[in-house]
Length: 378
Image (spheres, rainbow, N blue to C red):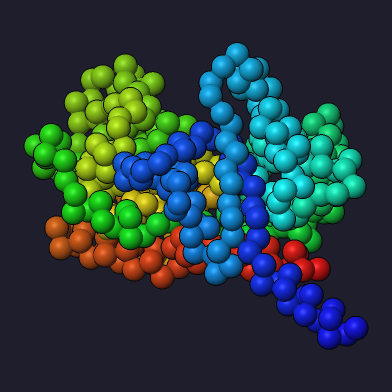
């Protein structure tokens, strides 16, 4: 009998897992690969999805995204939670060993539904936005605690979030894990050698680039730029042009709305450095931009926040500043603009080594797989 049970346990441990992945974004389902799309945004028939390609166990992964924009999606945007997708995931849950939600917008509703079910697969929830934007109030917090009362496995990409859990969600703290975000180093490193001829002339100018639509402190950046001695450098802000009128009298600052990913890659590869100015929030944001730019060999100026300190504190190719500190940002800009081409290159190469060694996609995948293995066989 003991031998039979041992064989049964070994068979279970060696069985390839079936995982349902429910991200809070739209994923393109393709029959043929499209290299213009980043890995999280595409599910290619016959190819492993995103970081799951690094799992040693080679799981079967199905992706259930948020679906097409429609009237129901407008309702979900207003309430800031997805409803239809988690319901579909709940109805399909028994076909899988693991349900993995990426973002509390999807994960909270799924977990609430699953908490009433007798049979429920392991639920792993990536908490990117601090459950509810890291807000604590007497109305919303008790509802979140009730939805998560069965304690799903939680993964965060900022270590300071664990302190937030310990203080405000102590029952979830024991199952909350910090896993550093990892980028596809090979993919973004390869973009350095793939210039777009249409943008070459523009990119040949001395340029500091800042990218991002939301959760960027462009006010601090622009004010710091105005008071800095930047020589013939220009600052280009891509993704948010809301301050364009306010700084229309500053010709060295250029604003642009969102541009195609291929053009953005070219801008990044040709820029002298990348600036990521951030406000302080107690959750993850800006990490993809930082690591992808570092993988492309860019020197960086980055605000040190809850989201970034794990990734930049030991990076010699990054100049760090504190949040909303215009003087510090100005000094960082002047320092970056005063560097020689060799100095910039050395910082960029240091950042590439830093990302490849500590924050690559394979390392992230291995840690996630270890967490799943730990709980799936309990």
